[in-house]
Length: 406
Image 1 (spheres, rainbow, N blue to C red):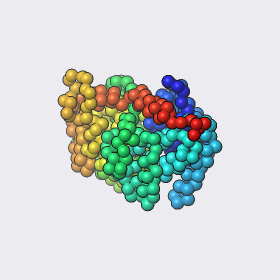
Image 2: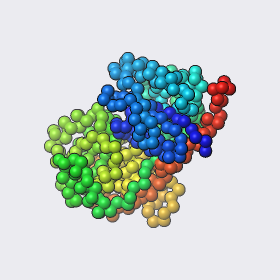
Image 3: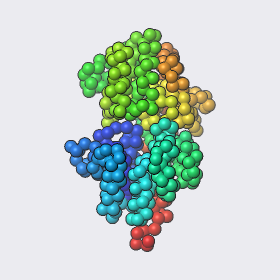
Image 4: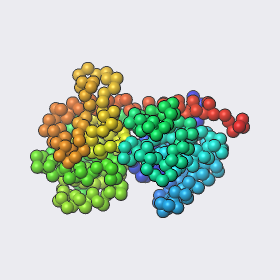
């Protein structure tokens, strides 16, 4: 395939960690390995960060942080527009995360500078782009501009359906599930070794092999329902005194959650850690993965946990049902094709606690679900994600007239 020069635009990237950042990192590394030139254009949130670095096989260029909310949006849009114009000879196509103000800016620039723009819709439900387009004061104008881009990548059917309801054309929406690495098969030895390794990173933690660890990975925002999960933990401890909850991530709710942990006197059982650039040891050290959100898009943390073979407790909503329902099942003894490969529960404290306790009390069931989740995760490979993007970008570039012919 002909070498492509691509610009990925995302407001957050390494060293910040989250679902979008992880997806773009995986995609950059794999497309760069295939010989394509990738530039990640992001925001310089900390003045101490260098303006340019290389990460995941791509060149990372940082534009200045936008500052205050009102003027910040305008300044960020201006900086994005300036960069795209100044570096126009260095790229063929722009791939931008989220359908927000910067998508409008990129599409306007593409019209003037004659380059195609592909958007990636992030999330669904309470944190999704569709909800923002409906509720924001400028959502209508951004929506109308986004409907003029070449294509929109959606990570799930739930995201596609929300955008269809807003009037996007079906042929404009391209479903490409996010990809995750292949992790080694979890064993007691790997679990023990990972806990020792993690303890070296976090000396205050003493994860004994007898502790049962439930893990959450993701941004700490209101819509993730983490306050309810923490409120559920005393119910878990009444039955299982060695049950720990590890919450890994950062976000606006961090201090609120830490205060809640203190008020409930859960400091010895519930721990909040900052984001990790690599989560391999965390996944190997854990016994169960839990995602309590009542409504969101496909969680990258959930996909990573499935790939690691962790049994899952998840809020029962459309995106989780989609991910956890077997598709093109090839194994002959794992689970029934119609049954989810995780424990789907109502996102209230009592149901979350029951879901966790059920898998602690039935280790054979937990092991079976973990194996089934690992098998299901094969449908979310980084290689398949990269190939789908590669084919989409090539198709769009083939149909786009060169600047000289415009």
